[in-house]
Image (cartoon, rainbow, N blue to C red; front, side):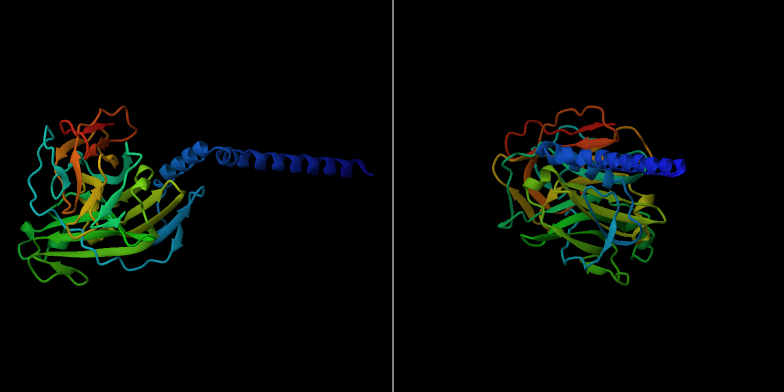
Length: 354
Protein backbone atom coordinates (compact mmCIF):
# COMPACT_ATOMS: atom_id res chain seq x y z
CA UNK A 1 0.00 0.00 0.00
CA UNK A 2 1.37 3.47 -0.94
CA UNK A 3 2.36 5.85 1.87
CA UNK A 4 -0.04 8.52 0.56
CA UNK A 5 -2.94 6.08 0.76
CA UNK A 6 -2.01 5.15 4.31
CA UNK A 7 -1.99 8.82 5.30
CA UNK A 8 -5.47 9.39 3.76
CA UNK A 9 -6.83 6.35 5.60
CA UNK A 10 -5.39 7.55 8.90
CA UNK A 11 -6.80 11.06 8.42
CA UNK A 12 -10.24 9.64 7.62
CA UNK A 13 -10.16 7.55 10.81
CA UNK A 14 -9.16 10.59 12.90
CA UNK A 15 -11.98 12.66 11.32
CA UNK A 16 -14.54 9.97 12.08
CA UNK A 17 -13.42 9.80 15.70
CA UNK A 18 -13.60 13.61 16.00
CA UNK A 19 -17.14 13.73 14.57
CA UNK A 20 -18.27 10.98 16.90
CA UNK A 21 -16.77 12.84 19.86
CA UNK A 22 -18.55 16.07 18.88
CA UNK A 23 -21.86 14.24 18.61
CA UNK A 24 -21.36 12.76 22.06
CA UNK A 25 -20.54 16.19 23.52
CA UNK A 26 -23.62 17.74 21.88
CA UNK A 27 -25.84 14.98 23.23
CA UNK A 28 -24.42 15.15 26.75
CA UNK A 29 -26.59 18.04 28.06
CA UNK A 30 -29.77 16.41 26.75
CA UNK A 31 -28.74 13.07 28.24
CA UNK A 32 -27.95 14.74 31.55
CA UNK A 33 -31.32 16.47 31.53
CA UNK A 34 -33.06 13.21 30.68
CA UNK A 35 -31.38 11.53 33.65
CA UNK A 36 -32.87 13.95 36.17
CA UNK A 37 -36.38 15.49 36.32
CA UNK A 38 -34.92 18.58 38.00
CA UNK A 39 -32.30 18.95 35.26
CA UNK A 40 -34.96 18.52 32.58
CA UNK A 41 -37.14 21.20 34.19
CA UNK A 42 -34.15 23.57 34.44
CA UNK A 43 -33.20 22.96 30.81
CA UNK A 44 -36.76 23.64 29.62
CA UNK A 45 -36.98 26.78 31.76
CA UNK A 46 -33.78 28.02 30.12
CA UNK A 47 -35.26 27.21 26.72
CA UNK A 48 -38.43 29.18 27.56
CA UNK A 49 -36.33 32.24 28.29
CA UNK A 50 -34.27 31.78 25.14
CA UNK A 51 -37.23 31.26 22.77
CA UNK A 52 -38.95 34.36 24.17
CA UNK A 53 -36.04 36.40 22.74
CA UNK A 54 -36.23 34.83 19.26
CA UNK A 55 -38.13 36.97 16.76
CA UNK A 56 -40.77 35.39 14.55
CA UNK A 57 -39.93 35.43 10.82
CA UNK A 58 -42.96 37.50 9.80
CA UNK A 59 -46.67 38.09 10.26
CA UNK A 60 -48.63 34.95 11.10
CA UNK A 61 -48.77 32.07 13.57
CA UNK A 62 -45.86 29.94 14.74
CA UNK A 63 -44.83 27.06 16.99
CA UNK A 64 -41.56 25.95 18.59
CA UNK A 65 -40.59 22.86 20.58
CA UNK A 66 -37.76 22.22 23.03
CA UNK A 67 -34.83 22.22 22.43
CA UNK A 68 -35.12 24.00 19.03
CA UNK A 69 -34.67 27.78 19.05
CA UNK A 70 -36.54 28.45 15.81
CA UNK A 71 -40.18 29.23 15.02
CA UNK A 72 -42.06 27.17 12.43
CA UNK A 73 -45.18 28.46 10.66
CA UNK A 74 -48.50 26.92 11.65
CA UNK A 75 -52.09 27.57 10.64
CA UNK A 76 -53.82 30.64 12.05
CA UNK A 77 -57.45 30.48 13.11
CA UNK A 78 -60.06 33.13 13.87
CA UNK A 79 -59.83 34.44 17.42
CA UNK A 80 -62.67 33.40 19.73
CA UNK A 81 -65.66 35.69 20.22
CA UNK A 82 -64.52 36.69 23.69
CA UNK A 83 -64.56 40.30 24.85
CA UNK A 84 -61.81 41.13 27.32
CA UNK A 85 -63.38 44.38 28.36
CA UNK A 86 -61.78 47.55 29.72
CA UNK A 87 -62.20 48.43 33.39
CA UNK A 88 -65.62 49.93 34.11
CA UNK A 89 -64.35 52.72 36.34
CA UNK A 90 -60.85 53.75 35.33
CA UNK A 91 -59.14 56.12 37.73
CA UNK A 92 -56.02 58.18 37.12
CA UNK A 93 -52.76 56.52 38.09
CA UNK A 94 -50.99 57.48 41.26
CA UNK A 95 -47.77 56.23 42.72
CA UNK A 96 -48.29 53.04 44.68
CA UNK A 97 -48.47 53.30 48.39
CA UNK A 98 -50.64 51.28 50.75
CA UNK A 99 -53.94 50.27 49.19
CA UNK A 100 -56.41 47.43 49.70
CA UNK A 101 -56.93 44.78 50.60
CA UNK A 102 -59.14 44.59 47.51
CA UNK A 103 -59.77 41.81 45.03
CA UNK A 104 -57.77 42.20 41.83
CA UNK A 105 -59.16 43.47 38.53
CA UNK A 106 -61.63 46.00 37.11
CA UNK A 107 -59.15 48.80 37.79
CA UNK A 108 -57.63 47.42 41.00
CA UNK A 109 -54.10 46.17 40.36
CA UNK A 110 -50.45 47.16 40.30
CA UNK A 111 -48.94 48.10 36.93
CA UNK A 112 -45.38 48.88 35.83
CA UNK A 113 -44.59 52.28 34.31
CA UNK A 114 -41.31 53.20 32.60
CA UNK A 115 -40.00 56.64 31.67
CA UNK A 116 -39.27 55.55 28.09
CA UNK A 117 -41.07 53.11 25.79
CA UNK A 118 -41.62 49.38 26.27
CA UNK A 119 -40.79 47.03 23.41
CA UNK A 120 -41.26 43.71 25.24
CA UNK A 121 -42.94 42.43 28.41
CA UNK A 122 -42.57 38.89 29.78
CA UNK A 123 -45.13 37.75 32.33
CA UNK A 124 -44.49 34.88 34.76
CA UNK A 125 -45.76 33.80 38.18
CA UNK A 126 -43.65 33.22 41.28
CA UNK A 127 -44.70 31.78 44.65
CA UNK A 128 -47.54 29.71 43.15
CA UNK A 129 -49.30 27.62 45.80
CA UNK A 130 -48.55 23.91 45.39
CA UNK A 131 -52.23 23.03 45.76
CA UNK A 132 -53.57 25.83 43.56
CA UNK A 133 -56.93 25.36 41.85
CA UNK A 134 -59.33 27.59 39.92
CA UNK A 135 -62.88 27.59 38.58
CA UNK A 136 -64.22 30.34 36.36
CA UNK A 137 -68.01 30.49 36.46
CA UNK A 138 -68.00 26.87 37.64
CA UNK A 139 -65.60 25.53 34.98
CA UNK A 140 -62.21 24.22 36.09
CA UNK A 141 -59.24 26.20 34.73
CA UNK A 142 -61.47 28.68 32.90
CA UNK A 143 -59.43 31.89 33.06
CA UNK A 144 -57.51 34.33 30.88
CA UNK A 145 -53.90 35.48 31.04
CA UNK A 146 -53.52 39.12 30.09
CA UNK A 147 -50.55 41.40 29.41
CA UNK A 148 -52.24 44.79 28.90
CA UNK A 149 -50.97 48.15 27.75
CA UNK A 150 -52.25 51.38 29.25
CA UNK A 151 -55.10 53.32 27.62
CA UNK A 152 -53.34 55.86 25.39
CA UNK A 153 -54.27 58.93 23.36
CA UNK A 154 -52.82 59.90 19.98
CA UNK A 155 -53.21 56.64 18.05
CA UNK A 156 -53.92 57.28 14.34
CA UNK A 157 -56.67 54.64 14.69
CA UNK A 158 -58.65 57.30 16.60
CA UNK A 159 -58.49 59.88 13.81
CA UNK A 160 -62.09 59.30 12.67
CA UNK A 161 -63.58 59.10 16.17
CA UNK A 162 -66.41 61.47 17.07
CA UNK A 163 -63.93 63.47 19.15
CA UNK A 164 -60.41 62.15 18.39
CA UNK A 165 -58.98 63.82 21.49
CA UNK A 166 -61.38 61.80 23.68
CA UNK A 167 -60.57 58.46 22.02
CA UNK A 168 -58.01 56.14 23.63
CA UNK A 169 -56.44 53.03 22.13
CA UNK A 170 -55.70 49.90 24.14
CA UNK A 171 -53.92 46.65 23.25
CA UNK A 172 -54.06 43.30 25.04
CA UNK A 173 -51.87 40.21 24.61
CA UNK A 174 -53.91 37.28 25.85
CA UNK A 175 -54.49 33.59 26.43
CA UNK A 176 -58.12 32.51 26.80
CA UNK A 177 -59.62 29.18 27.86
CA UNK A 178 -61.62 27.21 25.29
CA UNK A 179 -62.07 23.68 26.68
CA UNK A 180 -60.40 21.09 28.88
CA UNK A 181 -58.09 20.41 25.94
CA UNK A 182 -57.40 23.80 24.40
CA UNK A 183 -57.17 27.56 24.54
CA UNK A 184 -56.17 30.42 22.24
CA UNK A 185 -53.59 33.18 22.15
CA UNK A 186 -54.16 36.42 20.25
CA UNK A 187 -54.10 40.20 20.52
CA UNK A 188 -57.23 42.24 21.15
CA UNK A 189 -57.38 45.93 20.22
CA UNK A 190 -59.74 48.61 21.53
CA UNK A 191 -60.70 52.16 20.63
CA UNK A 192 -62.30 53.47 23.82
CA UNK A 193 -64.85 56.31 23.49
CA UNK A 194 -64.70 56.17 19.68
CA UNK A 195 -68.41 57.11 19.71
CA UNK A 196 -68.87 56.84 15.93
CA UNK A 197 -69.30 54.12 13.31
CA UNK A 198 -66.42 51.74 13.90
CA UNK A 199 -63.68 51.37 11.27
CA UNK A 200 -64.00 48.54 8.75
CA UNK A 201 -63.17 45.21 10.41
CA UNK A 202 -63.93 46.51 13.91
CA UNK A 203 -67.02 45.72 16.01
CA UNK A 204 -68.83 48.02 18.41
CA UNK A 205 -69.23 47.70 22.17
CA UNK A 206 -71.23 50.56 23.65
CA UNK A 207 -69.29 53.67 22.54
CA UNK A 208 -66.11 51.63 22.01
CA UNK A 209 -64.74 49.60 19.08
CA UNK A 210 -62.73 46.39 19.24
CA UNK A 211 -61.12 43.82 16.96
CA UNK A 212 -58.77 40.84 17.19
CA UNK A 213 -55.59 39.66 15.53
CA UNK A 214 -55.33 36.19 14.13
CA UNK A 215 -55.18 33.44 16.75
CA UNK A 216 -53.57 30.05 17.19
CA UNK A 217 -54.87 27.15 19.24
CA UNK A 218 -52.77 26.01 22.20
CA UNK A 219 -53.08 23.38 24.91
CA UNK A 220 -55.20 24.29 27.91
CA UNK A 221 -53.28 26.11 30.64
CA UNK A 222 -54.20 24.77 34.08
CA UNK A 223 -53.90 26.56 37.41
CA UNK A 224 -50.91 24.34 38.25
CA UNK A 225 -49.27 25.37 34.95
CA UNK A 226 -49.06 28.95 36.23
CA UNK A 227 -45.82 27.98 37.99
CA UNK A 228 -44.07 27.47 34.61
CA UNK A 229 -46.08 29.62 32.20
CA UNK A 230 -44.46 32.50 30.32
CA UNK A 231 -46.52 34.98 28.26
CA UNK A 232 -44.50 37.38 26.12
CA UNK A 233 -45.75 40.57 24.44
CA UNK A 234 -43.73 42.63 21.98
CA UNK A 235 -44.22 45.73 19.84
CA UNK A 236 -42.04 47.05 17.02
CA UNK A 237 -42.68 50.41 15.39
CA UNK A 238 -43.14 49.90 11.66
CA UNK A 239 -42.96 46.15 12.18
CA UNK A 240 -44.90 43.41 13.94
CA UNK A 241 -46.39 43.12 17.41
CA UNK A 242 -46.54 39.63 18.86
CA UNK A 243 -47.80 37.44 21.66
CA UNK A 244 -46.22 34.12 22.58
CA UNK A 245 -47.02 31.49 25.19
CA UNK A 246 -44.73 28.78 26.53
CA UNK A 247 -45.11 26.37 29.42
CA UNK A 248 -42.75 24.05 31.24
CA UNK A 249 -43.62 21.09 29.03
CA UNK A 250 -41.33 22.54 26.35
CA UNK A 251 -43.80 23.93 23.82
CA UNK A 252 -44.31 27.50 22.61
CA UNK A 253 -46.78 29.20 20.28
CA UNK A 254 -46.91 32.73 18.92
CA UNK A 255 -49.05 35.10 16.87
CA UNK A 256 -47.85 38.29 15.18
CA UNK A 257 -49.63 41.21 13.53
CA UNK A 258 -48.80 44.66 12.19
CA UNK A 259 -48.06 47.34 14.79
CA UNK A 260 -50.00 49.82 12.65
CA UNK A 261 -53.30 48.45 14.00
CA UNK A 262 -53.10 51.00 16.88
CA UNK A 263 -49.37 51.96 16.70
CA UNK A 264 -48.71 50.63 20.20
CA UNK A 265 -44.91 50.75 19.90
CA UNK A 266 -44.96 54.57 19.80
CA UNK A 267 -46.96 54.89 23.05
CA UNK A 268 -46.44 51.81 25.26
CA UNK A 269 -45.06 52.80 28.68
CA UNK A 270 -47.29 50.88 31.12
CA UNK A 271 -48.02 47.16 31.55
CA UNK A 272 -50.53 45.20 33.62
CA UNK A 273 -50.06 41.42 33.95
CA UNK A 274 -52.13 38.75 35.62
CA UNK A 275 -54.71 35.98 35.58
CA UNK A 276 -58.32 37.06 35.31
CA UNK A 277 -61.77 35.82 34.33
CA UNK A 278 -62.27 34.40 30.86
CA UNK A 279 -63.78 37.53 29.32
CA UNK A 280 -66.94 39.57 29.63
CA UNK A 281 -65.94 41.07 32.97
CA UNK A 282 -66.01 37.63 34.62
CA UNK A 283 -63.91 36.43 37.57
CA UNK A 284 -61.27 33.73 38.00
CA UNK A 285 -62.11 32.04 41.32
CA UNK A 286 -59.19 30.34 43.05
CA UNK A 287 -59.43 27.75 45.81
CA UNK A 288 -59.00 28.73 49.43
CA UNK A 289 -55.66 30.01 50.70
CA UNK A 290 -54.17 30.24 47.19
CA UNK A 291 -51.30 32.57 46.35
CA UNK A 292 -49.56 33.76 43.18
CA UNK A 293 -47.04 36.51 42.50
CA UNK A 294 -47.40 38.00 39.00
CA UNK A 295 -43.95 39.13 37.82
CA UNK A 296 -43.25 41.21 34.72
CA UNK A 297 -39.80 41.68 33.14
CA UNK A 298 -39.59 44.57 30.68
CA UNK A 299 -37.40 45.57 27.77
CA UNK A 300 -37.58 49.32 27.35
CA UNK A 301 -35.66 52.39 26.30
CA UNK A 302 -35.13 53.18 29.99
CA UNK A 303 -33.00 50.78 32.02
CA UNK A 304 -33.99 51.81 35.54
CA UNK A 305 -36.51 50.03 37.73
CA UNK A 306 -40.11 50.74 36.69
CA UNK A 307 -42.46 52.78 38.82
CA UNK A 308 -45.20 50.76 40.50
CA UNK A 309 -48.63 52.39 40.22
CA UNK A 310 -51.91 51.26 41.73
CA UNK A 311 -53.83 51.03 38.50
CA UNK A 312 -55.38 48.34 36.32
CA UNK A 313 -56.99 48.32 32.89
CA UNK A 314 -58.90 45.08 32.36
CA UNK A 315 -62.53 44.68 33.39
CA UNK A 316 -62.02 41.01 34.31
CA UNK A 317 -61.20 40.11 37.91
CA UNK A 318 -60.06 37.32 40.23
CA UNK A 319 -60.90 36.56 43.87
CA UNK A 320 -57.41 37.31 45.20
CA UNK A 321 -56.36 40.34 47.20
CA UNK A 322 -53.32 42.51 46.63
CA UNK A 323 -50.86 41.48 49.34
CA UNK A 324 -47.55 42.41 50.96
CA UNK A 325 -44.75 41.68 48.46
CA UNK A 326 -41.16 40.94 49.44
CA UNK A 327 -38.36 43.03 47.93
CA UNK A 328 -36.75 41.77 44.74
CA UNK A 329 -33.05 41.19 44.33
CA UNK A 330 -31.02 42.45 41.39
CA UNK A 331 -32.77 41.68 38.10
CA UNK A 332 -31.38 41.53 34.56
CA UNK A 333 -34.07 43.91 33.28
CA UNK A 334 -36.67 46.32 34.73
CA UNK A 335 -39.02 44.10 36.75
CA UNK A 336 -42.17 44.41 38.86
CA UNK A 337 -43.75 41.83 41.18
CA UNK A 338 -47.01 41.93 43.13
CA UNK A 339 -48.21 39.17 45.42
CA UNK A 340 -51.89 38.19 45.39
CA UNK A 341 -53.68 35.84 47.79
CA UNK A 342 -57.02 34.92 49.29
CA UNK A 343 -55.21 33.95 52.48
CA UNK A 344 -53.55 36.36 54.88
CA UNK A 345 -52.66 39.41 52.77
CA UNK A 346 -50.96 41.91 55.09
CA UNK A 347 -50.54 45.43 53.79
CA UNK A 348 -50.70 45.51 50.00
CA UNK A 349 -47.46 46.48 48.25
CA UNK A 350 -45.46 45.78 45.12
CA UNK A 351 -41.74 45.45 44.42
CA UNK A 352 -39.57 46.71 41.57
CA UNK A 353 -35.95 46.24 40.56
CA UNK A 354 -33.57 46.39 37.62
